[in-house]
Image 1 (cartoon, rainbow, N blue to C red):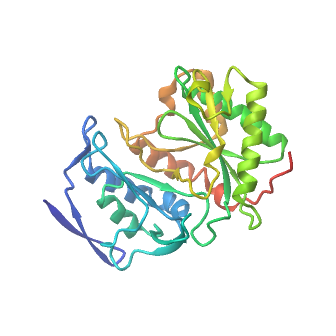
Image 2: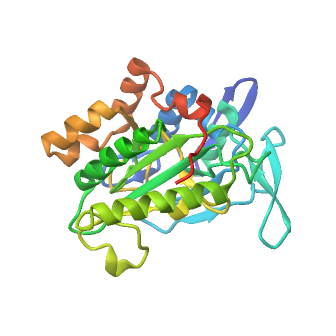
Length: 301
């Protein structure tokens, strides 16, 4: 096993197997992954901060077996920040918090290609600071159908005086987020509201949208997964890599860009690779910044 010692923010990290090809069909090695996360750190860290990380680890590469890890590994360095969070069985669990660059790089040395976090911070696990609509296309529907649904959803939310932002899932769909950032908000509120919106969308666009989870209802439609608004669920973090054949990034889009992509009819335009992600983030800034700061109240439906 090859090792390389590096210094980050005064910490010493022993990085291993840098030459390992974790995206074998694309030649994207562990060194490439570490470089990507180091360069995107200033954009992704605010969205990871104080959230219980769920590791999704691919030690042998994205085409091989993976495993989830919710508990912070016992072999973690002493400087990795942690929190104690409750579980359904009332047992406390120690989780990792990725609040700094050195912890982010440590997670990637464990081949945690994908970074998943809940919609609430560890210190207030029952208070979501955003609401999400997870748009998942059922074959033969695709991401372009998701763009149509996302734009309709944006307009509906706007009529309710709710601003929203959108990102690619990095896979087949899109994620539409509504910033809330209010201490009184509960997951019961966000789940009830998001389900009601999904049902309204299904009623008005029955050939395009379904709010039903059963697979048989999803064919050729976009499933609006409202159930992600739950304290036990996680979403892939903005700017995270996804474990696909190619190293695609879950990346924020402007609504204008989404409109243009829908008009162009080219789903490939919505696949953002690491080099493009870095370039665009550095040029345009964090299009999801408002998700962290904007305060909104859910209206009664």
